[in-house]
Length: 308
Image 1 (cartoon, rainbow, N blue to C red):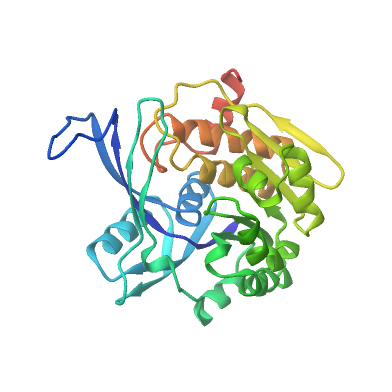
Image 2 (image 1 turned 180 degrees about the horizontal axis):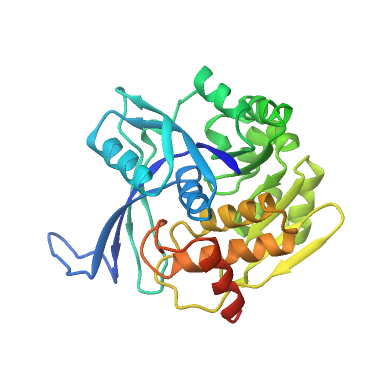
């Protein structure tokens, strides 16, 4: 699997456990603070690399120390960020995440270099050399440009996928809708599906997205696991029973596991199980890069861990 993860790159600074933000200039002692690569392109790339895929990323960061750190961290995870542009006009995208004791993660975010980036000819050439194109945050490209890139990948024989970063909203769906027919696997969360479609029933919402052109919708549901929905079938995969430390990057880890499973020839259910295992392993620690697991370890975890 030669995967190109194209789109959102973020440097996350996470702190835990944060009961509340101290008033005024008060302080609070914590157990852990980390800086990690994240975002719907970079975060997915990390776990794909752990699972044995050959991974490059394309996107943009600032010409600043945050960008230096983000690229260094990606390389340390086995990802090639050689197609990530450096921008002088804007800072690297970053988030500050005070992680609550139950794993919830309110976010303070700067869009930064992700906004306004347009892939160049080097990225287009790399798409033609990849067996998989994953768009992380197609809303930053717009539906027409996203479809152009997805079509380029498909014409080269690649499989395609996409994961939206922003909250679900009907207006956002219309913005990216032209890209849906080019997406083999759409990877939203349950709140996004409901927000996009206005459907309270999750299966109905997924089917509405399939009707708009997406090939398969594999949707994460937090502690309730995942659903894989096509025009013909609905598959339900439960979540694994774990003690959650931090949910940052869990959706990206699921995407990576699911896509890696498909690339290995596994059926959709088995691929979703691998995705859920990767999400659970990441949720056991702080940050989207948590866990020194590989494909064999993820499979062993899935085989030996009870589900909810």
